[in-house]
Amino acid sequence: MKIGGYRTLSTVDYPGKIVATIFTVGCNFWCEYCHNYQFINETEYQEWLNFDEVLSHLKKRENLLDGVCITGGEPLIHFENIVEMIKQIKKACPSFKIKLDSNGSSLSKIKAITPYIDYIAVDFKGFDYYNYSKAPIELEAIIHYLSSVKMPYEIRLTLYPEYFPKKDFDKVVKILKNAEKVSIQQYKSENVRVVKTPYSHDVLNDLKERFEKYGSSVTVKY
Image 1: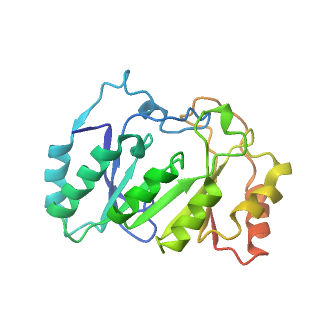
Image 2: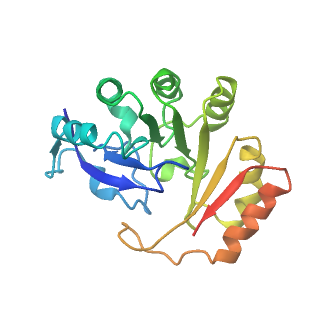
């Protein structure tokens, strides 16, 4: 089993936990602001890592880490391999918690992966998904499902101005106001495919305040 990247320590990839982060390669989206765009195209990627070596390293750090975050790319396009990876991690490091990041392109795979994970972050990319994918998105159904099975989760919004114009902010709140947690992230113009001027912090705070009017749990990452 091969993976694209491995970060040995992270304090930001899993809320409240210290984890290692595994990056898968391949994605069914092509977002302009992606800061991991080197992991999009499997056929062109060359810097592969052997998962067995990563697993060996994780075993040595079980007493130092709380778990693992699996991100990408889009991990769930490799569903069977991801399940096997999680099983091996859990067997080698029984105390580890597993967080998965997903672009939300497959409700059925999100349903299927939940028995194997402890936390999931699902991206909300914007309203016009056909700018970067042909995958049908069922975000409200995903929120309903994760809430019904009591899976800890967050919905992430990277406020890229081209995908989230200010005129859509109230519509965003309407869709996500009942989510367990909303994480608003600043679009950063370094190491991305397309460079645009980011929103100011005031704009991010404005969206946060709109959520708070409904009592939503919301954080902002500048």
